[in-house]
Length: 296
Image (cartoon, rainbow, N blue to C red):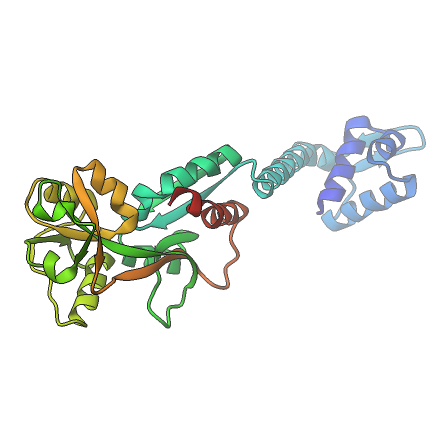
């Protein structure tokens, strides 16, 4: 059965008149008759009892009527829902992002996104860098925001910006008044950092090992907010991506430009190649690319 055939059947069944049904469907009498005939042949029997004066439903036609109504209603609902999805009048998109981005830059981007697409819902998974890559790779989410993956990654990376690490020190530290600080000076202090396998931790260790330098780690945490609070409390110093500067300041710590060496890495949007984004995910992808500069 086709939707066209079911609609033709309903039009005749509801009016019990081929002439009236033709007007409703904007079909010629011959076209309508052929449509009903094809439906009856496909099902294996007559649905209508026809004379020169009357049209009536056969018992089989009576049995089909409520099912046909439901089929057309379901089809119309599905058609309406799909149209709303494609026109972004409804829908949901799931995103994975590293906590530093999810906490600091993502909220204002989502605010702009919500103003433009008020009927779209967004689910945010704030997880470590490695989990972002895994969730995109396994299609648990359509989009990810994380550091650029290593060469040879199976994911497509669209860069947003280069994030440079800054020093985080207590506001009452002798280092707090400096405008620039080198790593050698920073590492003379007790160091606080994220636990492995955090990409922030791994990235710092890789860059410093290349310079024969080592992190003097005395405190570790899973959350950047806890790291910032520890620094603000005077337990030591740290280094975080520059996008966390405002967060560190709110926690009571001071951020200073770091050099010798400069540690930086591209931040961007991850997608899985070969899998077309939904309309909602594409809209969020475009918003990420368009809005990040205004909130950085």
